[in-house]
Amino acid sequence: MSVQPKRYMKFLLACVLFFLLTPSMPRASAGEENISAISNRITREQVMSMPGNHDAIHVSDHVSMPPLTTEEERIILHKGTEMPFSGRYWKETASGTYICRRCGAPLYRSDDKFDSGCGWPSFDDEIPGAVRRLPDADGQRTEITCAACGAHLGHVFEGEHLTRKNTRHCVNSLALTLIKEGQNTSDAKKNADNGVKTPNLPCSGVAYFAGGCFWGVEDAFSKTAGVCDAVSGYAGGSTVSPDYEQVCTGRTGHAETVRVSFDPARTSFEELARTFFEIHDPTQVDRQGPDIGTQYRSVIFYTDKAQKESAEKLIARLRELGYDVATQLVPFTSFYPAEDYHQDFAARTGRGACHMRVPRFELPARPTHVLLP
Ligand SMILES: [Zn+2]
Image 1 (cartoon, helix red, strand yellow):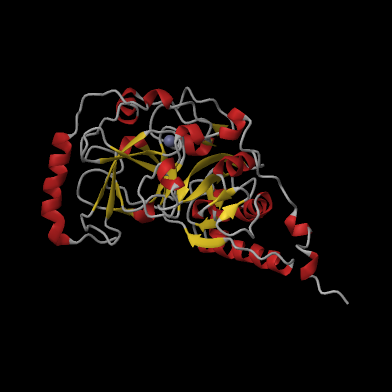
Image 2 (image 1 turned 180 degrees about the horizontal axis):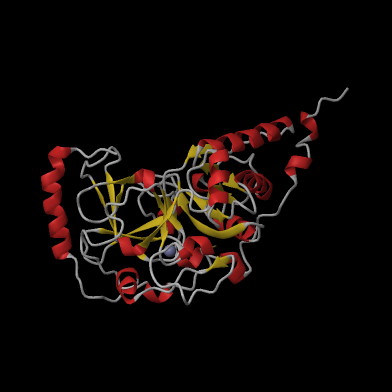
């Protein structure tokens, strides 16, 4: 990825200012108490390749991420900033996937890494849905955190014109662990066969489904085999970081959407998309039962060509069966997790689990669509 040289000096100056203005003392974080234990796991082989002392690691096929060092805690939990040009990844060029040092969630691909000259690893894109953006306590910058566990990663900047995507995720090396391509040979082979660049780490699969009220969709997917996590949120609109009230007006363009993280070894996008078509009525336009409005429209936000083709195939099959499918196929751009009180709503309250499964792929639609002799 090339850097436009004209901007370089100005940018270096900005980097120095950024570092000087960043508090080096640990400071309290409002969300810190909410960071809960994480169940994402990576393989032993991957952990053993990480820097640091592994004596304490339980030897099995799958192990948790190693405990954080004091310095990692300062960065990840207390929102600290490491010295520029000091981390292990700022000039790293190896191919692979950068995962969260705290929970192991895949965050960035090496393809999106570029040399910003800033002294911290810089990426102009993230793995879809992996990184959460929050207004920084300083009122100026935008903080980035791991969407899975809330670990502080660094900050994101836009409008610097350093790369075509015009975005720079400025990430502390200490918040990341690089899983180099080919490090897990079986995964590397599977990925090569599928043309996928991300290693098949557990829970590295992601899919985005909008099918009416997200409470019910989230509830249905959270009970589906192979799903690691289902999160209610908003996607498909233009408002950045919308809240529920804004989305309810129907004017943000967002649809209530569920981000489904899954283990590619246990299920597939196609399997999940099939479930999606059976737990909501894909023939309803801009509504789902009593919930009316564009925020309840049916959408699959696909993250790559394979997901798109897979969804097209299922829609074609449903049309053959007589269903007038209204589901939109839209390229994924961004996902904003909904407020905490919407998460696990059906499981917590016993309400909102309205998405009954109808085996549409085995049932022709309406008899009127069947040509009788
Ligand atoms: Zn994490």
